[in-house]
Image 1: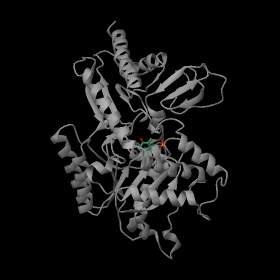
Image 2: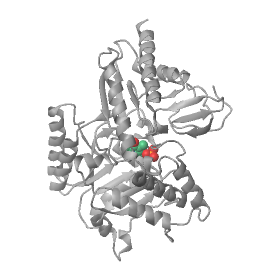
Image 3: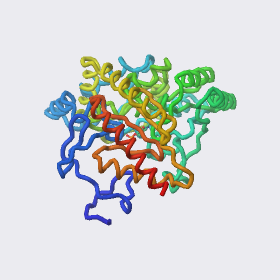
Image 4: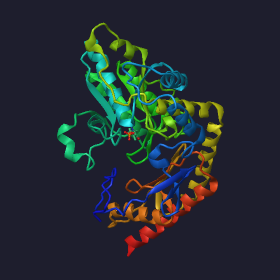
Length: 426
Ligand SMILES: *Cc1c(COP(=O)(O)O)cnc(C)c1O
């Protein structure tokens, strides 16, 4: 299907995919398409929607902000939505973060974090340029974030452009693998020249919903600290309640030097990102020497409507029982995951806060690459929006998801797996 639309969609092989549905309305945990179908959004529209689609106070804040301001060059002006959001972020973020730099996507937030870390040492005349990451990580699709992420078919064509980073083995499962990761990091730090460790706290998202322990996270930070290495927490996906707490760092008592947030920052309504940094990192860029400037900008830095949406999101967190809703979703998942324990079609049944994941057992001779599209076709037929990562099935719904809606996801996963595996068996 070559199609009549000129639109090129993200992560989409247009030669293989069915035509795109047209979204005409979104509300709560649902998206309504042009044919009038109500589709249940089990992945929060790629992990951005937290409270629900078009959450009223957030949409209202965007409308109100638009009455006064549109984009105003942020290298010349500030404005109240940006100021208020920065103050609010610092108040709720892990302690020690005192400065907020705005950009407009998770990738740019991480790029800024990497640049801040390198600039921090460069401006002090310290030779530290190496970056450590955990293998299988994902930090975005720009050249810098691809460099830090796992290499593979997704970025092979761009390989000549990607810089090298130090990769730590994934810390788990089990004490031995945890220790191997910590030992590898310690050894790297001892070699010297290490600027920062860039890490997705507790959950590798796009890497297959792989979870690791808060203890490892805090140990990695301890080692970093001992060697003067900065910790960059990529909370782009984990932030805003996904792992059960507002930020995943909280569960490890981690106080990162740099924290990147985006997806849930505006409740998913409008693009915005922030890179939070410690006072030391700001001060290493603060100088009468212009060369020490943090040379980064996006045209749409601190868009007022986006910042107002962020402020509204903070207010929702402060004034509504968001944590109770999250706790309820966590409990609902836990109850439903149990039924898969004796299902031979699944393994590695796991949960991190509001994220539930399980691996499909693909029989020998079954082609892994085939099961994803087949499952997606099945989910589409059932009006469930789920996108398996290889053989990993996961649910990451907005916090307004009802128990009945969760039942539909779990029924769909159970039935979809049965159907797809039967096809392999033939
Ligand atoms: C999605 C994601 C990013 C990239 O965010 P974009 O807004 O898509 O650029 C970075 N890091 C993590 C952990 C993510 O999940």
